[in-house]
Image 1 (tube, helix red, strand yellow):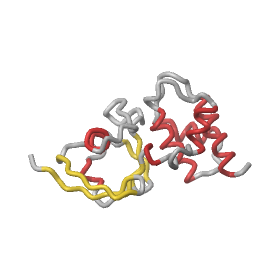
Image 2 (cartoon, helix red, strand yellow):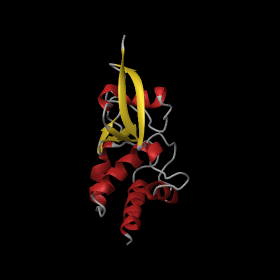
Image 3 (cartoon, one colour):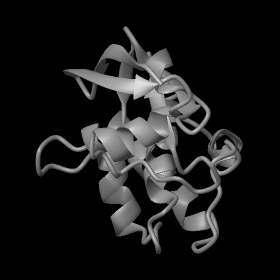
Image 4 (cartoon, helix red, strand yellow):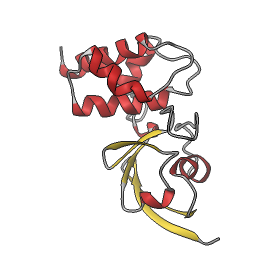
Length: 158
């Protein structure tokens, strides 16, 4: 099989890679680019563990082909912190103990950031609706919702 040359921007950095036609973006990120923060939970787009944003739109990277990333801007969990300084959402997830095994956490963080970029003052219902595509088998969801609402308050300076 021939490989395709892909030129993209990931977390603000220009990146080029070769991938096969059927290779998912998730597999490219994890296997070829060693960006293992994005997790595979189901491989069918049902759990949200592999969430990334492409040109500002949240997607399940297990459902996107690597070749589709050509010319696009991708944000992954690896780009969320600023060096050693955690993003406010990451900090609030820790403060609220909104994580356990960690498989779903990167997807929840990416989804939460996408929500707060669109709606800096969401209601609890809006947070629950927005995060409905992300599944967690360990924590339940209350601590996650509390962490997102707390992060939103801090980001707004409330």
